[in-house]
Image 1 (cartoon, helix red, strand yellow):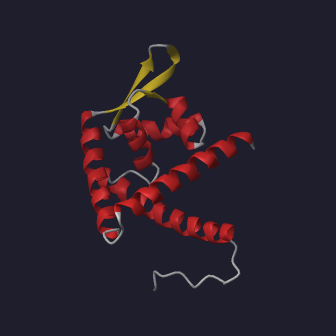
Image 2 (cartoon, one colour; image 1 turned 90 degrees about the horizontal axis):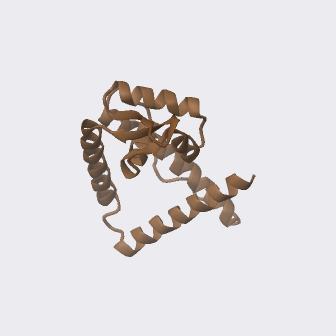
Length: 158
């Protein structure tokens, strides 16, 4: 099986080309996220790695903010957090500013596992893009960030 996509039609619009590449990227990212989660703990699924990474970057985040960030319901986040808590990766405490909410942090074990997994992922990306200039890598990161921000903003209004 070839990893090279079929040659797109010459008359393909830039937006159609972007949609195709996002579709491929999403499929590959899902597979990668699943592998990353399994490296952290064998009982986790693909949703765990991005959730843990967000908690790592935002210690003390509220469960309701996680639901909004990931575009899922509070019940879904609560189930995911319960699973992460049961395997010893996160701590949930009552929010001191609002007793109805919870603040979420990584446990020491969770932070260690996430840091190791993150370092391995960065190393893999570095190897895969070894022929890229740092300017190209930075440009891609910047464009992907811009894309994500614009999509979130658009979704909030529709």
